[in-house]
Length: 243
Image (cartoon, rainbow, N blue to C red; front, side, top):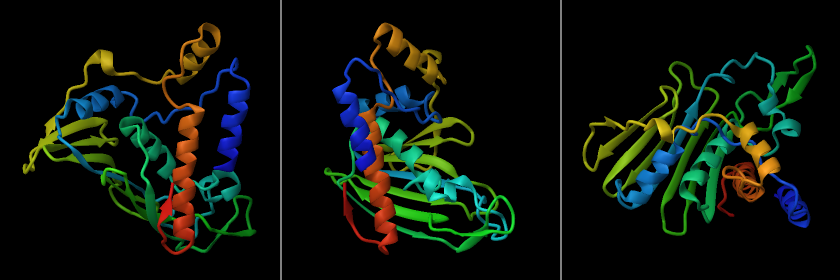
């Protein structure tokens, strides 16, 4: 957080310079549609946001450690937690006021990439968390690198009138009515698909002064408030942390 604050302060002291953080790309084709559906009240009052991303990258305890398990490279981020929070922040435009997390390292040491040297693993291989927004909306997350079989990769938005489910694996968005288990696919209008154009956006902001539309340094600070709070909560054995 302190480093993100320093970056933001430096940008404010140099307002003629353009700042942008590379945006989370997975939802870019769906962001406009999902934000529109939330604002239209299709699913009613938002009650719960559930994000799940699992895989088996850490299931084999004999495998060497990767860069996401190196705190010098990955910082306080855990698995892919931060980038999914960035997407949720983009949709909801608000932060939880407090979070609680519990994570575990199952393989305490792993071989370094270069061979025989063993390194201590401190970043959790599995983590679950709860966040509470000021309006009592709940944020529920589970990220795991030890889940074998079919991976799970989705965000669900549960409201008083229905739900939305973005399945990242199939790149499809689904909507369901309150009390129903049936899902209807939401067709994304061609003009609503943004695609990957982050570099072009940045260049246009520099050359033409176009406002940064995706991840600003302010968003980056919000991102770090969340990831640091989750990391510290987990490290302390599960304590509530305010953002």
